[in-house]
Image 1 (cartoon, rainbow, N blue to C red):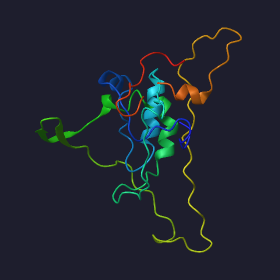
Image 2 (cartoon, rainbow, N blue to C red; image 1 turned 135 degrees about the horizontal axis):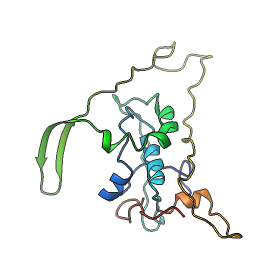
Image 3 (cartoon, one colour; image 1 turned 120 degrees about the vertical axis):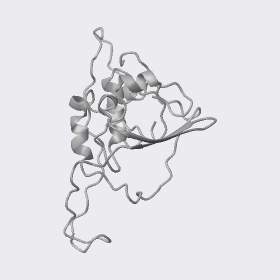
Image 4 (spheres, rainbow, N blue to C red; image 1 turned 90 degrees about the vertical axis):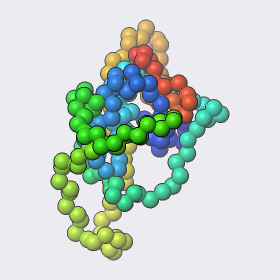
Length: 191
């Protein structure tokens, strides 16, 4: 937990039951390219009244291998705008608004491989900067650093008796979707 880039970080390996996935309306459909969808999912888990659980490092952990961006999966220039809207849009943008065309279905012994056409990004690409790709020219402004997503308020806070301290935001976020074979998100209200 201490190695997380920011407290509400939710990337890498996670587990959800089908009911939990439907309860949070699945993945958003508005994200195209790299970035933001994992933070949107973390917000959806909380907005659906579930919690993110992380096992102790002695039980299971995940470390990302440093890598370059994928060609053809460029950074999503709209990701921060989309994250700001998650609290308003998560019930309308997800499983209930997904459109696709089934291209193939291959039944394997342990899995089913489904190939589908989900279309293309409906938004126009943002105009490139004034410089060509490659190293930054001397004096050119630096690209902004990746910031953590905006914090969303908890959907509902149960009544706390006077004198009972509120759990830290970090502890709140770190109880409840596990990694690997650990228990998935809890369906109970956030504590």
